[in-house]
Image (tube, rainbow, N blue to C red; front, side, top):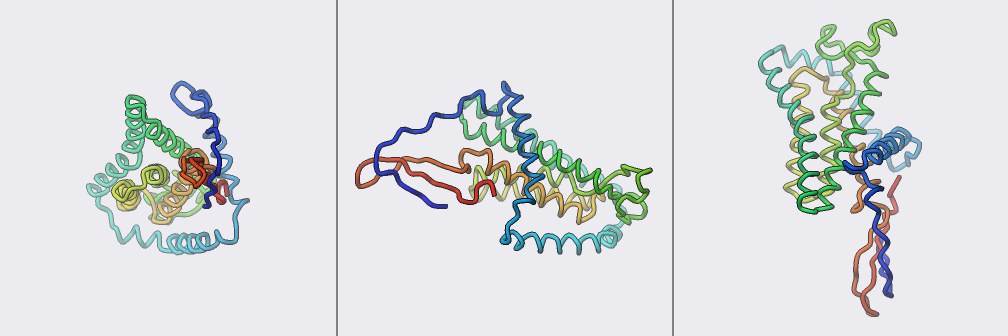
Length: 269
């Protein structure tokens, strides 16, 4: 990030028209935004930089290690129907119902209070969850991994070949991907310590609950959480006015008031 203060009075840019933003009255814009984001997320590996290997390599290694120990981890958990039922409810409410309800409540509250920032946060979190869901379903059908309830938790990929496709696919975890996408957007928009503890604590609880409920292997949750985080970050940095390519703010200079321009050199990468 770098800042360039303007040394003369300049006119602020014309605000984006209401009809060009995703809102309930402009659902076609929402569909377009989600489609554009999904295309960008899917094609993002093409823009991988050498510095990205610092997280890609550890992520790949951790995923491989998790896959290796998946079956053992599920067997060590044992079978406890009541516990699994309870944690399945925790993950359903925390990973699906609560984030969706929070996005809806935030949108209504933002509209009632004329709080554009809250409204934007609600919209972006909903878009991120939509992107995460689409990506999740595509990967599930592409990988067709058996879930832990089948075949003694072997977790095979395409276990029955094309004839048995799809076979209750398990990777990645939709709940984990959904809640981490939501958490990244909300935690990025409202980056106070308490808010981040709340949303990331929720996301972590959901991720762990999916394994304890025997709905997913640890590697399913790891992949889902990571991809959800990345999907949320993509939406946050491409759609948010606060985290966009160029941010403008009023500044005081020796020659009078002007406009400070903040340019994100990593935006869109």
